[in-house]
Image (cartoon, rainbow over all chains, first blue to last red; front, side, top):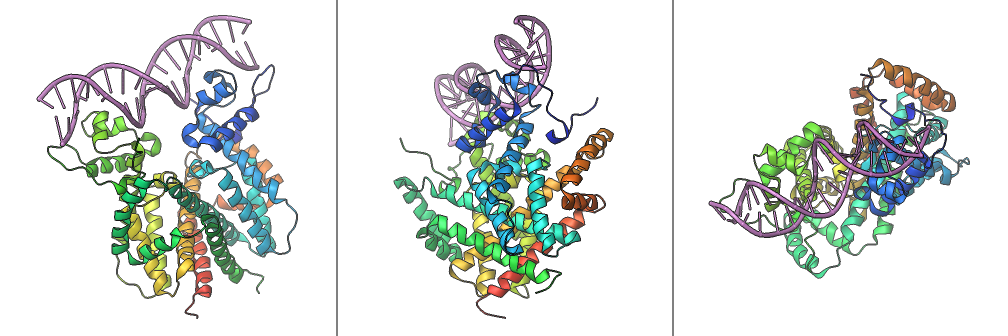
Length: 238
Length: 238
DNA sequence: ACCTGAACACCGTTCAAGT
DNA sequence: ACCTGAACACCGTTCAAGT
């Protein structure tokens, strides 16, 4: 009759006695597999095998695979504040930019987070701490009320969207090398250039570019635009 | 020896003779299932059953489930330009905002796109047409070269990120009603408020708010910030 | 309390064989 | 050319039974 709790975070880990496993261990293993092989490589059976155990036993520690993903997500979210260092910065712009950069770096290390996170509410302790840090910076800058939420959301949105685009681009680049690829693509690209002149020019230009540097440039460009807009709306003025 | 083509779009549909199915039909069915039940509800066997056919026969039209998702993604991307109307707008800001609003509306209708799209390069005709439209607006506003790319990317990033956050919030709201939920959550929320004062205040305030309206407010807030920043960087000046 | 082993109800994909 | 039917190698999850 009673439905299960909607989130892992509302239900503490069970008390221990003579366990061979732990949530920490299972989550760590899951993150390692996700990093190495992406979401498609992760299965309960695979994790169990890696830990020298049967698949069924994992369900003693975790009620569902989905719940395990929630835990994995919060695990890597913890890296952002850990490495950014919570030391105070010169100004709110710099502090916010540092937070955003750390967030981006984490997402690039763990690209599976992007699809994992989509549509999933996120109440883990590390997610909360990260939000609090962002709110603290923006509150210090003078934002309050609904604008405080919206300002933080805008920055987070940019980070998320930018990394999503970035990983797509990177994915497109790999496997570009093969001869047959070039041949099959050439005709398609000619049609694209004919029907979409602006896009054609931009794609031609994209061929020569260093993806790494260009992604960073775009990230900074969008973030600067956003921060300019925030600065203009800052209650404190100037 | 020869690897399969990296994308559906580089390989045209096979010539027909006496088919009972078509790509259009299959993709349409897939989109309907995804809209109704999300990514977890979609299986090749399910689509086949819906079309009165065996699972294996789908592979005559589509080489892989992943490829089918690529097709589904471009299908719904087509809705954006179709409904936004390509009629010219008063200014570049309004035109860009209209495009972004249409994009957001489509993503809200088909939330599965967010996880589908993550990390997947996207060369479908509708994706290309949508990019061209965005580039045309920004080129008309005076942007060129790498800044043109970065400006469009910034707007798209905001749309993507904002809708991702929005769907998470909506998901968290559903199932909030149950009595046990309230009870279990209360204790956790008290701890959150204690450890994260700013966040605690914002969460308390979020309880009273109309999610629909607040999401639109945040979307507009972030977009306006961005457009302000773009305006300041516009080569044409003023 | 914790784990095994086996089972249930699914998957995506392949491929002979039919028409 | 197009589709069926059956198979292969997987899934997540449950649950009696062991220790």
